[in-house]
Image 1 (cartoon, rainbow, N blue to C red):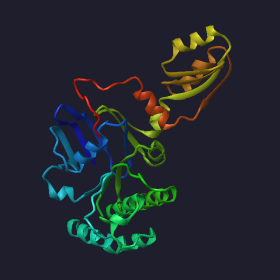
Image 2 (cartoon, rainbow, N blue to C red):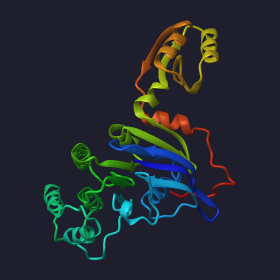
Image 3 (cartoon, rainbow, N blue to C red):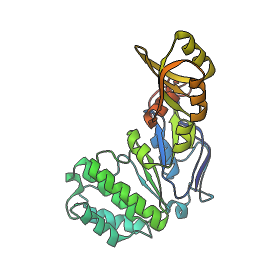
Image 4 (cartoon, helix red, strand yellow):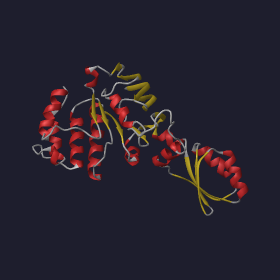
Length: 303
């Protein structure tokens, strides 16, 4: 399990991570989402022990991560700009990481390179963006670490490669207890893959919930009210996060569970109403809409 308590990190006058307390349980895929500059990349670098916190604490299996090589050996970090040595081949990068990670499985790495159609002897600098990303992920999977930290996990991967990577995650989670922790600007990836999400905004954590519970607490309703009086009565009874109207048809996001929402709408006059499936994107927008960074805390964008 990875825990952060009141984590802080600033770069000059920019506070990139602001009082973040999170728990990332073993055996789950944890997804971190947020606006541009929310601090996602900085947060992962702190977890990996690449950056030292200004305040707070990070525990990996109840041990501090900073200046702790034994615990760092349990984490493999795949940043969005993964560094490959100049002129290096996948085979050479595998040899390098095998020297760093005691559990690195070179036979499996070679097998995965073949399965993904990656030439082990070709210079990586000649690869496409997607092939470089695949190689970085395969290095991480083959490292044998308990935790895999991935920033912008699927950036540059086509749909087929994304599915292959998801399959790798699922297999390693079942077979050896891998715990992936990832960020992505594509909320669909997070929605389809993750068990639990954390929502960062302006360096601080807005929420950390399992996806099922998050959706249970918010409902999307399409409705045509019988009259303006019925509409006003409904809006006075529920917490409305957003309300979009096209002619008589309205789409309303309500902060309540399904039973409470149905009861509220049945209590007023409607021509029609229906509770529709809610996407993570809609939850994300509703949680962050209207929020702005405090000018005294950060004055620039920094991931």
